Length: 373
Image (cartoon, rainbow, N blue to C red; front, side, top):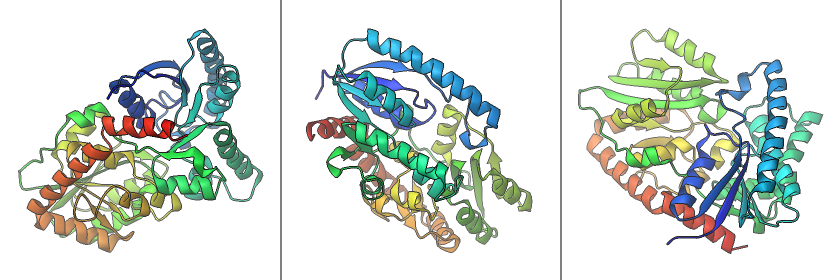
């Protein structure tokens, strides 16, 4: 089914963060016309939490100049049926709502995260109860109230927006994250050289549960299992210390992998790790990397949560475990010993992705969300 809808993608959403770009790809593939009033504020800044204060001042100036530019683009562009504001667009939405007063396109906000939940509750960069925390909470609430429709990546996440931030449930609709075209075109082909390779990649934050993963690795140190870590960020020092402590070559750390190299590593590993954090956020989300693995048919183990159960079944389409290193170690070891069973689970996971998180599925969810208003 094709749709002739025109969608204006507005704002400074992060091109390195796949959520918005995946959905826009899906809409284009479904026949929608997507026009862009966009600039990439975060280009060249992989780890936002590690920016120096003076960098934030430069970003503020760049943001102001960028918003003036795309506001001019917007005024010259034809009216769109949908005005879409993507990830990290909390301030963008305020500008979009102002510009949209006369056009009255359907204003869709796709925050993907709650700033309050991420910065205050999950990463604990800002303390609870203070002025900054209250301002961050307000920056969550206001754009959601101005939007006609708020997208959530899981129903569990949508319930947080409803119960904690007070967003009316009639505004909230679930659209899964999915995976980009490159991952959907790639296929899992594990090496058969006798080494059991476990891959973990992330922007290291509490969401990912690094202590749980490192504890599991310590418990498996006598086994012939190799772990590759790729990425960096807030908790990078923990990985550095673990690699330094490892007497064998059980852990390899790669500070970053570009897209093609990451897909190559994913296609040849035996098992991939998701998230194992014990935070509220970790229970509410299905991370992008899980969708990427499912798209390729790569077997994944991640923490059990209300969010993951919205899409997958433990032992049928993926592997889940409790948030502790002992349980994770047991699951990894079981997968190594019964690899034929792992392949069957990976095949079923890929089938679930095709049915519920591929581009046609995401486009269908988006159009149904609009129709349900």
